[in-house]
Length: 215
Image (tube, one colour):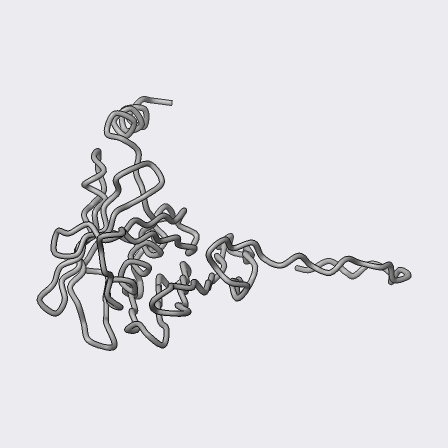
């Protein structure tokens, strides 16, 4: 329960809060609410929404709600993407959307359902890939470094994404690629939902072996 407020003290000057530093993001980045822990020990996570500026597509909103397992990407020049975890699914803490089970996820593009197929995530970077099929095209977001993942459309490398799993996403498009609106929206949605990057195989193997040791 909240503590009783302390006796009022004389007001003192306070500095204005500094604006959020969001690099490529504008100042619309915010958390809907702070984290808190209820009486049952459940820790609710913040809902994070950021607005990024894409040169050819304008402002794009990327919203991640880890509590219900939902990612929404929308903007005036891109299709609306919604990725939702099924109600009742036990969330895994290290996955922003909460699960890599494609059967427990629903992906829609402007209300039309698309197929999403995340790999399970094992001992190789490729095992952390996420595949999408929609409108006779395929997309894949797959780690290619510790912090980053590449986005492929129909096996063509079109962009690079990075996200720490906190809902904030950075994208760089290849000079020889001409991303379309759906490429952009899906890239941001997948990066926000699953994070990006993975350790090399030898490091993943060492970690897996360490987890099997007693104590």
